Length: 231
Image (cartoon, rainbow, N blue to C red; front, side, top):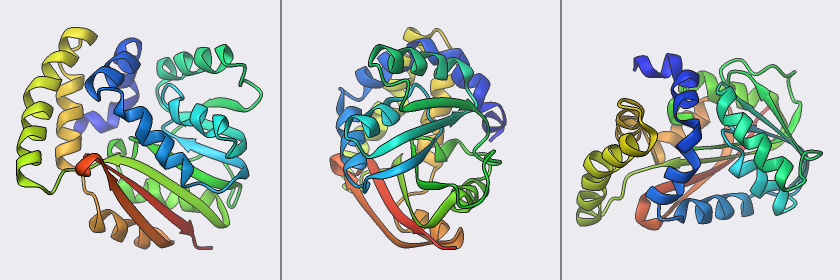
């Protein structure tokens, strides 16, 4: 998918409306998903949040006291500018820092972080397996990985309504509020074409993770994965 090679530019274009649209289109359920995912973490010292965006997951990690220092990395500088403003407003700037960089070539040495997280970012990687290998590389022995990502409901009736909403209603609202004609079409396609469940677990195993567990939320709309890195 060509858009994935320019994902930073795509998110730069919609950064100003991203949070507002996220909460509106998910009916604020996205906040609950992040809280549940963060509860899966054991407290640690240094944590890397990949595809940090506007910082919602990083802020929730600090709020729940699950890491002393969160480093957020992203290709979208405009998204991170908004994240920095939110962090400063909450007086969390000593606990959260933002770095521009690619998930496919993380600018950190091997075995550097106690935990790695990624919320709604892995489906945007131009090379999923490379991104997962990089996450494992920077994890300390037995380090924690938490991934939160969209999935698809297995119930046929729920899936039908979800597909109707995601394919027709969401892109129109996204275009109207963000004034971007292509971004929300891409976001719709990226969810529909991405893997989830056991197929995602297989990619995690291949990347060097073990003890992989995952659970769905909100009838399968999103899935949280937890894994441990192998040295």
